[in-house]
Length: 318
Length: 274
Image (tube, rainbow over all chains, first blue to last red; front, top):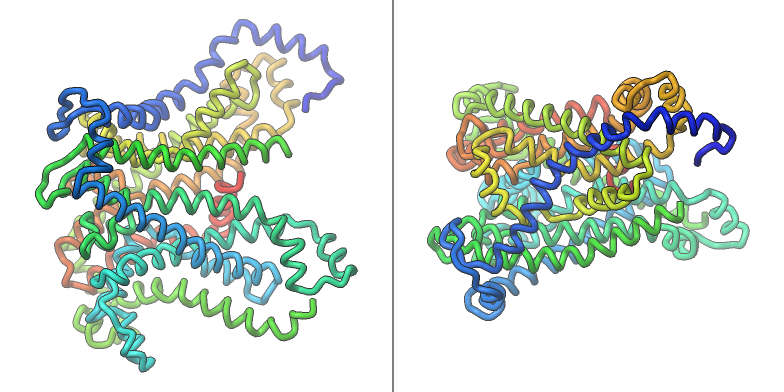
């Protein structure tokens, strides 16, 4: 990067720099302090918390791995854990299909330059501007069994047999929430995939055309391989987001995983352990909660590490 | 392409169908906010008979919306300013100097982009309690600055690295200190990157409801998103007011979006693929 021509001036600059040298080290300090105190420290602290017994938010004695053991072997904790874990998996899978799958198709349509593509982009993106709590509450009203718009629309279309208490039924509550999440996130996916598509060199398509490739084989042979980075980003972001899923679930169903723990996610379960209401009452279980946080943290970090490795590789490539 | 001729109409129908699913709920929210609850219950899908603002008047009597609004403005503006200051200082250091630990510092910040900070909420709660920041808007500001720093540093560092150094070196020869160089020479050229950071972080801090949910219980210290929580908790039967509340909560962001939709969409995408 450095121009090789003016090595003379570089020497001069270095001299000039000397006396001011130490002040420059103050530059990253504010960011390091705030980031260190409010991000890094709490996560480390959560790790140490998991090895202690807790009475409310007062720390008791060191108990080693007891919290972890209880989390995985003691009922109802272990049952609730695996129940919530399964829901997180479902969250991830459905988002991959209905959010990212659809987003890719839509991005491809926009890429093909249909008329009104600007409008489409804005339309898909609009929900992303709302606060998640607004999204949750708005859909809670829409999905209301008595007065909600969805059931009324179904009735108008003559599809009464599909009317449901969407959020009151354990079979549909979680799926409804996840689909609302897809509604919220699809525009972001479209933009990411569109950016990926637009970075494919046009010449490749022309070369493909000359070789007689038709639409589908063009997608298979040219588009998909070159879209791997975008898929990777969306997959990892979706993964992290679905294993942290909290706000939308909380907004739509509260912290109890209503009905009958059918909408429990690990983060909701964690919130209950940490801030009360886990065993019906308001007792907190900070030790167990911290153990759960550590497990979830390690699980997410493993994939985070993969993502960072990939990004570093990408930077080297550039 | 062979498929174009017969697939194109299908493309259109599909794309616009999904677009209407994206827009319709938001439209419904705005339209319903002009209806009385009785009108919503009897004819939920029709246009409002009159555009009366009674629901909004009721809403403002029910909850201290202007207080929530001012709190949100204060928190978001201060957070974004602090993020811009701290991140450009750090990014300047990382991108423009070659101290041996620079890569470590950069990686340390980068790591934060993926750290699930919500899992540290119990220690954070105790920390805020010890710092006497519970029920203070500063608890939120610190959180938004801390969570915003990693991505902002990534974006700004990337941008710094693409910029030629000649101007800075000229200023240095003229005897300008680092702070002067950053403020007078570099930052004015960084406007696009600063704009991206601003938009991303503004949306984050304006819309967040997790941290105020934990840190704020005093009604007069609430930001708009947690304000919605109390609205829905206390007045869940008055649907007209509920829709009005949701609309008011979303309006500022939607207006900003239509003023600068391109920057919004580019900003958020860049944040992810940088």
